[in-house]
Amino acid sequence: MSADVSTQAQDAPYLELHQQGGIATVTMNRGAQFNALSSGMLDALQRTLDSLAADPEVRVVVLGGAGRAFCAGHDLREMRASPKREFYQRLFAQCTKMMRTIQTMPQPVIARVHGIATAAGCQLVATCDLAVASDESRFAVSGVNLGLFCSTPSVALSRNVARKKAFEMLVTGDFISAAEACERGLVNRVVPADRLDADIAALAAQIIAKPAVAIATGKSLFYRQLEMGTVAAYQLAGQAMACNMMDPAALEGVQAFIEKRAPSWSGKPSAQPASR
Image (cartoon, rainbow, N blue to C red; front, side, top):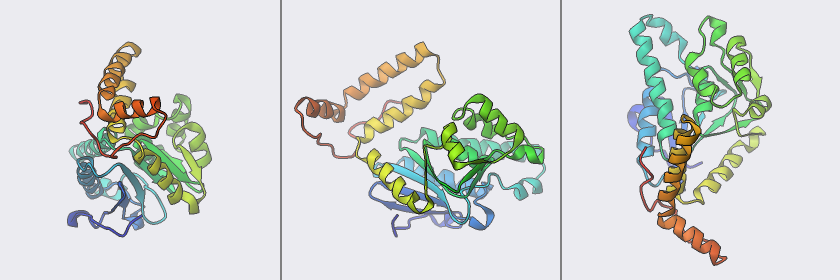
Protein backbone atom coordinates (compact mmCIF):
# COMPACT_ATOMS: atom_id res chain seq x y z
CA MET A 1 0.00 0.00 0.00
CA SER A 2 3.03 2.21 0.34
CA ALA A 3 6.60 2.37 -0.87
CA ASP A 4 7.79 3.17 2.66
CA VAL A 5 9.65 -0.03 3.60
CA SER A 6 10.94 -0.07 7.17
CA THR A 7 11.62 -3.76 7.82
CA GLN A 8 14.36 -4.43 10.36
CA ALA A 9 17.52 -5.77 8.71
CA GLN A 10 17.39 -9.17 10.42
CA ASP A 11 13.77 -9.64 9.33
CA ALA A 12 14.16 -8.55 5.69
CA PRO A 13 14.62 -12.11 4.33
CA TYR A 14 11.32 -13.11 5.93
CA LEU A 15 9.09 -10.03 5.95
CA GLU A 16 8.34 -6.75 4.26
CA LEU A 17 6.75 -3.96 6.29
CA HIS A 18 4.97 -0.98 4.71
CA GLN A 19 3.36 1.77 6.78
CA GLN A 20 1.07 4.51 5.55
CA GLY A 21 -1.88 6.41 6.99
CA GLY A 22 -2.12 4.35 10.15
CA ILE A 23 -2.05 1.01 8.28
CA ALA A 24 0.93 -1.33 8.73
CA THR A 25 1.08 -4.01 6.04
CA VAL A 26 3.19 -7.02 7.01
CA THR A 27 3.96 -9.38 4.14
CA MET A 28 5.49 -12.80 4.75
CA ASN A 29 8.16 -12.83 2.06
CA ARG A 30 9.16 -16.46 1.57
CA GLY A 31 6.93 -17.12 -1.40
CA ALA A 32 9.07 -19.96 -2.74
CA GLN A 33 8.46 -21.77 0.57
CA PHE A 34 4.76 -20.83 0.58
CA ASN A 35 5.56 -18.56 3.55
CA ALA A 36 6.05 -21.51 5.87
CA LEU A 37 6.24 -20.70 9.58
CA SER A 38 9.85 -21.67 10.18
CA SER A 39 11.63 -20.64 13.38
CA GLY A 40 13.10 -17.70 11.48
CA MET A 41 9.71 -16.60 10.16
CA LEU A 42 8.16 -16.87 13.63
CA ASP A 43 11.00 -14.81 15.13
CA ALA A 44 10.56 -12.12 12.48
CA LEU A 45 6.79 -12.01 12.97
CA GLN A 46 7.18 -11.79 16.74
CA ARG A 47 9.62 -8.89 16.58
CA THR A 48 7.52 -7.01 14.05
CA LEU A 49 4.22 -7.51 15.86
CA ASP A 50 5.76 -6.48 19.18
CA SER A 51 7.10 -3.31 17.56
CA LEU A 52 3.79 -2.47 15.88
CA ALA A 53 1.83 -3.12 19.07
CA ALA A 54 3.85 -0.41 20.83
CA ASP A 55 3.47 2.15 18.01
CA PRO A 56 0.56 4.57 18.65
CA GLU A 57 0.68 5.71 15.01
CA VAL A 58 -0.37 2.22 13.84
CA ARG A 59 -4.14 1.77 13.90
CA VAL A 60 -4.60 -1.38 11.79
CA VAL A 61 -2.27 -4.24 10.83
CA VAL A 62 -2.75 -6.16 7.57
CA LEU A 63 -0.99 -9.54 7.40
CA GLY A 64 -0.47 -11.20 4.02
CA GLY A 65 1.88 -13.43 2.08
CA ALA A 66 4.02 -13.01 -1.03
CA GLY A 67 3.95 -15.42 -3.94
CA ARG A 68 1.22 -17.94 -4.67
CA ALA A 69 0.01 -18.62 -1.12
CA PHE A 70 -0.89 -16.98 2.14
CA CYS A 71 0.82 -19.57 4.38
CA ALA A 72 1.29 -23.34 4.15
CA GLY A 73 1.82 -23.85 7.88
CA HIS A 74 4.94 -25.03 9.65
CA ASP A 75 8.19 -25.70 7.79
CA LEU A 76 8.06 -29.51 7.60
CA ARG A 77 11.63 -29.81 6.35
CA GLU A 78 12.89 -27.90 9.37
CA MET A 79 10.75 -30.02 11.67
CA ARG A 80 11.95 -33.29 10.15
CA ALA A 81 15.59 -32.18 10.41
CA SER A 82 15.34 -31.86 14.22
CA PRO A 83 13.41 -34.90 15.47
CA LYS A 84 13.63 -34.04 19.16
CA ARG A 85 10.78 -33.45 21.58
CA GLU A 86 12.52 -30.38 23.06
CA PHE A 87 12.76 -28.76 19.61
CA TYR A 88 9.11 -29.44 18.82
CA GLN A 89 7.92 -28.13 22.18
CA ARG A 90 9.98 -24.98 21.73
CA LEU A 91 8.69 -24.49 18.16
CA PHE A 92 5.02 -24.86 19.10
CA ALA A 93 5.46 -22.59 22.14
CA GLN A 94 7.10 -20.01 19.85
CA CYS A 95 4.18 -20.24 17.41
CA THR A 96 1.61 -20.00 20.20
CA LYS A 97 3.28 -16.87 21.56
CA MET A 98 3.13 -15.21 18.14
CA MET A 99 -0.53 -16.17 17.67
CA ARG A 100 -1.39 -14.85 21.13
CA THR A 101 0.40 -11.59 20.34
CA ILE A 102 -1.97 -11.02 17.41
CA GLN A 103 -4.94 -11.18 19.75
CA THR A 104 -3.43 -9.20 22.64
CA MET A 105 -2.00 -6.30 20.62
CA PRO A 106 -4.28 -3.24 20.69
CA GLN A 107 -4.68 -2.88 16.92
CA PRO A 108 -7.06 -5.05 14.87
CA VAL A 109 -5.16 -7.47 12.60
CA ILE A 110 -6.68 -8.29 9.20
CA ALA A 111 -5.56 -11.42 7.36
CA ARG A 112 -5.15 -10.79 3.63
CA VAL A 113 -5.67 -14.29 2.24
CA HIS A 114 -4.89 -15.57 -1.23
CA GLY A 115 -3.94 -19.01 -2.51
CA ILE A 116 -3.82 -21.64 0.20
CA ALA A 117 -3.89 -21.36 3.97
CA THR A 118 -3.13 -24.77 5.43
CA ALA A 119 -2.44 -26.23 8.89
CA ALA A 120 -0.78 -23.48 10.99
CA GLY A 121 -1.48 -21.12 8.07
CA CYS A 122 -5.19 -21.79 8.54
CA GLN A 123 -4.61 -21.29 12.26
CA LEU A 124 -3.10 -17.90 11.45
CA VAL A 125 -6.24 -16.89 9.51
CA ALA A 126 -8.45 -18.03 12.40
CA THR A 127 -6.29 -16.14 14.90
CA CYS A 128 -6.40 -12.78 13.11
CA ASP A 129 -9.20 -10.51 14.28
CA LEU A 130 -10.60 -10.18 10.75
CA ALA A 131 -9.97 -11.98 7.48
CA VAL A 132 -10.67 -11.05 3.87
CA ALA A 133 -10.02 -13.73 1.24
CA SER A 134 -9.82 -13.76 -2.51
CA ASP A 135 -12.33 -16.03 -4.20
CA GLU A 136 -9.64 -18.49 -5.29
CA SER A 137 -8.38 -19.12 -1.75
CA ARG A 138 -8.55 -22.57 -0.19
CA PHE A 139 -8.28 -23.64 3.43
CA ALA A 140 -7.36 -26.87 5.21
CA VAL A 141 -5.98 -28.26 8.45
CA SER A 142 -4.33 -31.11 6.63
CA GLY A 143 -1.75 -32.43 9.08
CA VAL A 144 -3.79 -35.58 9.58
CA ASN A 145 -2.93 -36.56 6.00
CA LEU A 146 0.69 -36.81 7.18
CA GLY A 147 -0.16 -38.61 10.42
CA LEU A 148 0.02 -35.38 12.47
CA PHE A 149 -3.27 -34.13 13.92
CA CYS A 150 -3.43 -30.33 13.77
CA SER A 151 -3.83 -29.94 17.52
CA THR A 152 -2.62 -26.36 17.92
CA PRO A 153 -4.52 -25.13 14.83
CA SER A 154 -7.61 -26.78 16.30
CA VAL A 155 -7.60 -24.27 19.16
CA ALA A 156 -8.08 -21.27 16.87
CA LEU A 157 -10.23 -23.14 14.35
CA SER A 158 -12.73 -24.37 16.95
CA ARG A 159 -13.14 -20.81 18.23
CA ASN A 160 -14.20 -19.61 14.76
CA VAL A 161 -15.98 -22.55 13.15
CA ALA A 162 -18.87 -24.60 14.52
CA ARG A 163 -17.62 -27.64 16.44
CA LYS A 164 -18.68 -30.40 14.04
CA LYS A 165 -17.50 -28.49 10.97
CA ALA A 166 -14.14 -27.82 12.64
CA PHE A 167 -13.72 -31.46 13.65
CA GLU A 168 -14.61 -32.64 10.15
CA MET A 169 -11.86 -30.44 8.72
CA LEU A 170 -9.40 -31.77 11.30
CA VAL A 171 -10.09 -35.49 10.79
CA THR A 172 -10.40 -35.43 6.98
CA GLY A 173 -7.73 -32.88 6.09
CA ASP A 174 -9.94 -31.83 3.17
CA PHE A 175 -9.74 -28.38 1.60
CA ILE A 176 -12.69 -26.03 1.72
CA SER A 177 -13.29 -23.15 -0.69
CA ALA A 178 -13.22 -19.47 0.20
CA ALA A 179 -17.01 -19.39 -0.04
CA GLU A 180 -17.28 -22.31 2.41
CA ALA A 181 -14.77 -20.63 4.73
CA CYS A 182 -16.92 -17.51 4.75
CA GLU A 183 -20.11 -19.48 5.34
CA ARG A 184 -18.48 -21.28 8.28
CA GLY A 185 -17.15 -18.08 9.87
CA LEU A 186 -13.44 -18.59 9.20
CA VAL A 187 -13.24 -15.41 7.08
CA ASN A 188 -15.37 -12.25 7.08
CA ARG A 189 -15.79 -11.81 3.36
CA VAL A 190 -14.68 -13.13 -0.02
CA VAL A 191 -13.89 -10.85 -2.94
CA PRO A 192 -12.42 -11.20 -6.44
CA ALA A 193 -8.62 -11.27 -6.38
CA ASP A 194 -8.35 -7.93 -8.15
CA ARG A 195 -10.46 -6.28 -5.42
CA LEU A 196 -8.67 -7.80 -2.42
CA ASP A 197 -6.48 -4.82 -1.54
CA ALA A 198 -9.21 -2.26 -2.17
CA ASP A 199 -11.68 -4.12 0.04
CA ILE A 200 -9.15 -4.43 2.85
CA ALA A 201 -8.26 -0.73 2.55
CA ALA A 202 -11.93 0.17 2.86
CA LEU A 203 -12.32 -2.04 5.93
CA ALA A 204 -9.19 -0.55 7.52
CA ALA A 205 -10.47 2.97 6.83
CA GLN A 206 -13.69 2.20 8.67
CA ILE A 207 -11.70 1.09 11.72
CA ILE A 208 -9.30 4.04 11.62
CA ALA A 209 -12.27 6.42 11.60
CA LYS A 210 -13.13 5.25 15.12
CA PRO A 211 -11.29 6.35 18.31
CA ALA A 212 -8.22 4.19 18.89
CA VAL A 213 -8.90 3.85 22.61
CA ALA A 214 -12.36 2.41 21.97
CA ILE A 215 -10.99 -0.14 19.49
CA ALA A 216 -8.12 -1.17 21.78
CA THR A 217 -10.33 -1.45 24.86
CA GLY A 218 -12.98 -3.33 22.93
CA LYS A 219 -10.55 -5.79 21.41
CA SER A 220 -9.02 -6.60 24.78
CA LEU A 221 -12.43 -7.15 26.35
CA PHE A 222 -13.71 -9.20 23.42
CA TYR A 223 -11.11 -11.96 23.80
CA ARG A 224 -11.08 -11.97 27.58
CA GLN A 225 -14.83 -12.41 27.92
CA LEU A 226 -14.91 -15.26 25.40
CA GLU A 227 -13.07 -17.48 27.90
CA MET A 228 -15.44 -16.66 30.79
CA GLY A 229 -18.85 -17.73 31.97
CA THR A 230 -21.74 -15.37 31.26
CA VAL A 231 -21.87 -13.80 34.73
CA ALA A 232 -18.13 -13.05 34.86
CA ALA A 233 -18.17 -11.86 31.25
CA TYR A 234 -20.93 -9.33 31.97
CA GLN A 235 -19.09 -8.09 35.07
CA LEU A 236 -15.90 -7.56 33.10
CA ALA A 237 -17.76 -5.98 30.17
CA GLY A 238 -19.57 -3.58 32.47
CA GLN A 239 -16.29 -2.44 34.01
CA ALA A 240 -14.77 -2.03 30.56
CA MET A 241 -17.70 0.07 29.33
CA ALA A 242 -17.61 2.28 32.43
CA CYS A 243 -13.88 2.95 31.89
CA ASN A 244 -14.45 3.51 28.17
CA MET A 245 -17.28 5.96 28.88
CA MET A 246 -14.94 8.10 30.98
CA ASP A 247 -12.54 8.55 28.06
CA PRO A 248 -12.73 11.97 26.33
CA ALA A 249 -13.32 10.27 22.96
CA ALA A 250 -16.50 8.58 24.22
CA LEU A 251 -17.67 11.73 25.98
CA GLU A 252 -17.17 13.70 22.77
CA GLY A 253 -18.94 11.03 20.70
CA VAL A 254 -21.99 11.00 22.96
CA GLN A 255 -22.11 14.80 23.13
CA ALA A 256 -21.88 14.99 19.34
CA PHE A 257 -24.80 12.57 19.05
CA ILE A 258 -26.86 14.68 21.43
CA GLU A 259 -26.00 17.83 19.48
CA LYS A 260 -26.64 16.10 16.14
CA ARG A 261 -23.15 16.80 14.74
CA ALA A 262 -20.12 14.79 13.67
CA PRO A 263 -17.72 13.99 16.53
CA SER A 264 -14.33 15.69 16.60
CA TRP A 265 -11.72 12.99 17.18
CA SER A 266 -7.96 13.29 16.80
CA GLY A 267 -7.65 9.64 15.71
CA LYS A 268 -5.14 8.95 18.47
CA PRO A 269 -5.78 7.28 21.80
CA SER A 270 -6.50 9.77 24.55
CA ALA A 271 -6.01 7.22 27.29
CA GLN A 272 -4.58 3.76 27.79
CA PRO A 273 -7.05 0.90 27.31
CA ALA A 274 -8.13 -1.09 30.34
CA SER A 275 -5.40 -3.44 31.49
CA ARG A 276 -5.45 -7.01 30.29
